[in-house]
Image (tube, rainbow, N blue to C red; front, side, top):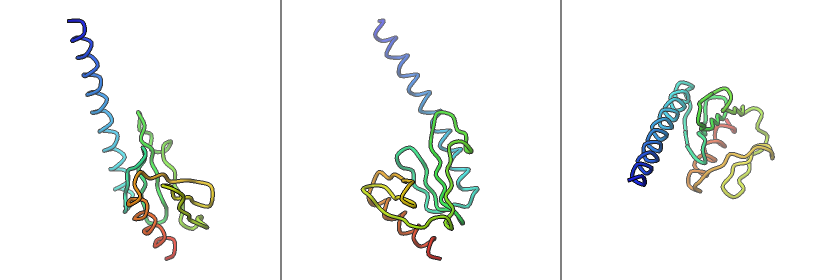
Length: 117
């Protein structure tokens, strides 16, 4: 009986955290759409999006603070872009991580198009 109560407690916590995380993701997605960003990819715990003048990366965390959890890279500041393993490396310093090779190359191709305009 104690085992069943303990299991139910854990299951309720997992369900509550999943629902809370879902609302975080919706808030981040709404912010990105309001910024008129295209080519949005969610990988390795963060959203990566190509916006009009910059790349926007917003990390998912337990509490959503867009200003604190986001990084923006202006296209004009990007001097070189390389691909190493499953990462896009900007200016030899910052890495954008991807989970799948297909997502990486789709984002990389769109990024190069934006930079070379």
